[in-house]
Image 1 (cartoon, rainbow, N blue to C red):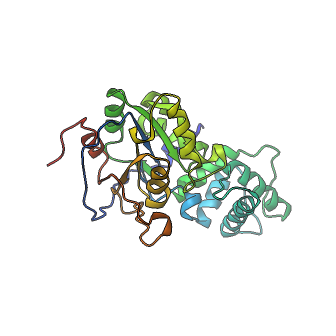
Image 2: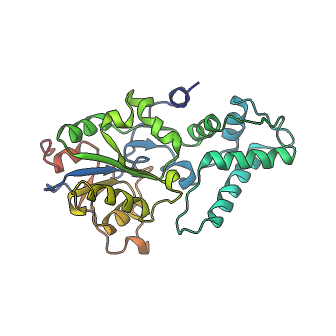
Image 3: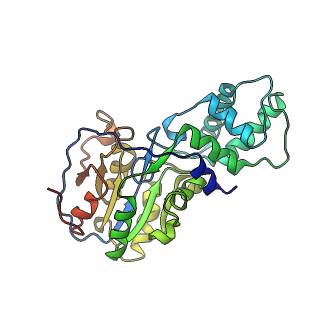
Length: 296
C-alpha cells in the first residue's frame, strides 16, 4: 500500500471551525510569487499543526499503527511508545547545533523501535521495519487532515496568473503526499516549483527560525524576484508571519480555522509584527491579488 493510499484510507472530511476574526483584504500590488504554509493553511489539521509541533500524542494510535505494519507490543503500552518517541525527538533536538532543530521522523521511529525491542516491548524486531508506512499510519491517527475549502481553486488561480508558487512548512516526507491523496495531482502538477519549496525535515531546521525562508528567498532572488514581491500565507503569527516578514516577504495571516489559528498574543517574537492582510477563507487570497472580485 502506498503512502498516498494510507492517507486516503485513514482520512474523513473535516470542516473549518470559525475563528471570529474579521478579514482585512487590501489589494496587494507587485506580487510575483506566493508561498504557503501547509498544516492549518492549505490543509485543515485536526491537531492544529503537524503532530511533532502540536504535541499530539495518543497511545492507542501508536498501538494501532504498530499493529497495522505487523509489529505487536508486549509487556508495554502505546503510551510508553509515545513517551519513547518523544524522548527520542527531544534527544535529537538537544544534539542539534541549530536554534530550531527538526528531525526526520523515519530516523526517530527507527531508533525508537530499536530501543523498544532491546527493552523487550516488541514481539519481533524486523531488520527492515516499514518506517515510512508506520510514520504516516501514526500521523494520520493523531493528526487527521483534509483539504481547506478552496484549495484547488486558489492554487489554480495563482498558477494561471503566472505567479511563482512555493511552500515553506514544518513537514515530513509524507506531507508531500497530501496533495496527490486529496487532489490526485502532485505538488509540481499543482504549480509548486521544487526550488521554492522548503520543508523542515529536509533541512533539519524548523520554523519559527528564518532559515527555511532564507533558502526560498535565495531561490527567488535567482529569478530576479525581490522579497517585497513575495506573499507568504500562513496561520501562525510566530511560525509564519514573523519570520516571513523578517526576510522581507509580505504576509497574509490565514484565520480560517480555529483549530490552527495561532495569534501568539504576548509572544516576544510577534511584537510589532503585523500581517499585510488577514483572510478567513483561502479564495480571499485571489481577491487581494486582484485575481478575483473582492467578496461583499
